[in-house]
Length: 619
Image (cartoon, rainbow, N blue to C red; front, side):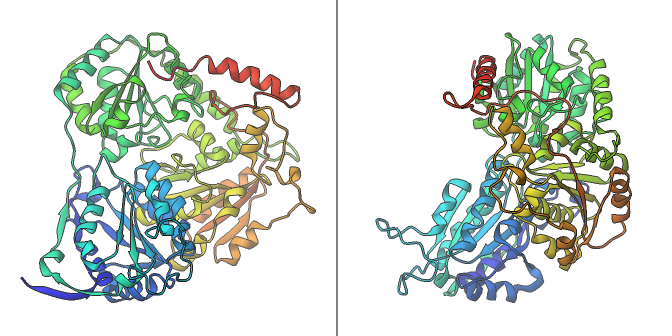
């Protein structure tokens, strides 16, 4: 057997550099030769990874590029956004040192896990030989000598392994890639890499470094399940489809639209599924649930059969299980994983979305569902146009809906809008009229601080797209440092920063739940001086092109101007904090205190109790 002597870290990087992914016929860029699955490694070095992993990354050079980030969490967010944009067919690795570098990434790992997205976390760990224990930043468990800070990753990754001997990589690395390329179990992987082991030499079989092409399977559904679901669709008088993110990852966007047209079934798109098909499709009724359109929620309320395709049926999608109120309602769930396919008493159809839709189409033949109210969709579009129109009263700040309207009016087929937390995710879901592929929302974890780094990741994955990042002042303050990274690497995108002087979204929720305005807007916080933050100066200090829009008209012009730049553009606009989307929506289950407090809490509790009576959790 021919062997090669390398350190464990060198062997890891060499192995990763030759792991390829089979092209997908559903992707325009997928025609041709296999490409590297792990495109590169985001890195912030410290004493737990600089000597081992750092040296190995330097040595491998462009065969596995290294990119420097500003914060461990946000560089991981960029990796996640990249993987999401690439429909899980490409991924990045992220490496940090032992201690705070690693634990900074736990939030990002949870985000990737909830959203079922592949990221490889390479975390420095304690010494396997324990000679210098406790090392700097080492967490000591008084009762368990095997624990390190990296054990925090266990509940938030799909696969966890601790590399305590070089030869552990011979099994750990293939397991990691198996998880990341598995369509049903896809998610983040953490390899906690003991820092002394990174530097240890080992005689590796040369065969270990032979290039490997990974294939993302397309599991076929069980014929009995297909027949059962087809029978339910044939019997339904008012079916509706809920299109989720799994439709996009399957490459089944056109298949879903064709299925809806052939069988005359209207559909709504979840946050993860929005943009799979253009809003202009006459059977696309917008979004369901808490941040749903009136027309989609009306269809959902009447539906006697709800057909979920690639959705987890998250509480925002279901209106906390109050959206589907027809007493005769039945639930079908088409999903790759039995865990998701059989939630809430659903009739499950386990398989790839594209494959399942094809089998169902064959089983249904020329069947068409009864007519539905197509006019309600046009009424809804008129309502959207009204709330997003550029009405400017003297001395009045614009609403978030009007900001969305400004971007919508200058958007093109190449525009991708993105966000993650605060007011804008709900407002965008209910109001934004997306082109196909024009929407990117991290709403599985709804993580404040994802926005700027995520926009950079999207642009890296889709350089020909115009990426527009909506971010509130609260999320911007949490994490903005990757703006400097984007400037240094000349990665252009546009940030629309809405400044309502605090956490306006949660301030409204606080009041809806009967609470007083407290600790959300700066004016209601325990501060000696109300802050006057110059976001333009701050963004400009990191090298971005930054300016403030005085009104909606200026905002529109500035977005168009930003298209000519090779650095990020930050456009700040002040908005009012009281109005949400201004249209659409349904109830969200947020518990209201049962006792104590003033009359407003009692009224909120009474309303809460009434809504809870509408919930249908499991049938």
